[in-house]
Picture 1: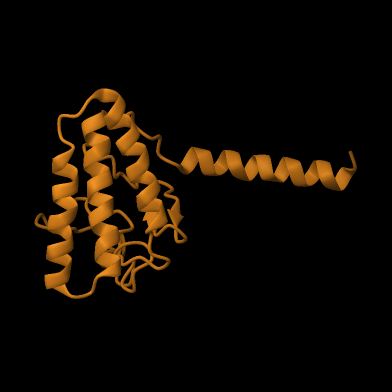
Picture 2: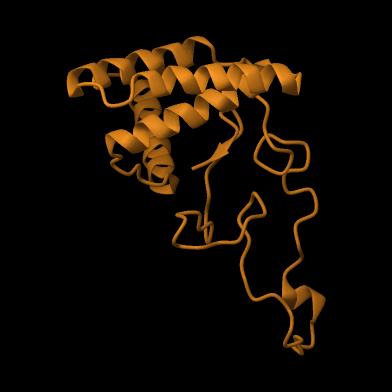
Length: 164
């Protein structure tokens, strides 16, 4: 091993370790939660492909009927259908998916973030009715219950257009 190869491997390991620290840990989902997320992602993918609202509603109804037709199937078939559904979703993924303008990748993302109260009131006389909550980079309120607490460092992946 040359010094240059060793240095590159060490740097890659350091960067990977830093990214892993910033990423939120994935939670273990039940089968029903996985199906609900697959359905929701399918609707979002459909909305990226279909512009006309009437056509979208018709296709969304067809999609819902596909999900409902397999409700209550055997466990082995459910696992197979979930795997096939994820593969189909991957196949139809839009190359430039629609995202809400104030989310990562949107045109309004962090355009007008609120200034810190210390800057607005340098004398320290903060009014009692001033908001006392912290905002995430997507301008949603930080709450531990939702798992979206961007206090400290947050990894914003502009390639996937999301926060981790």
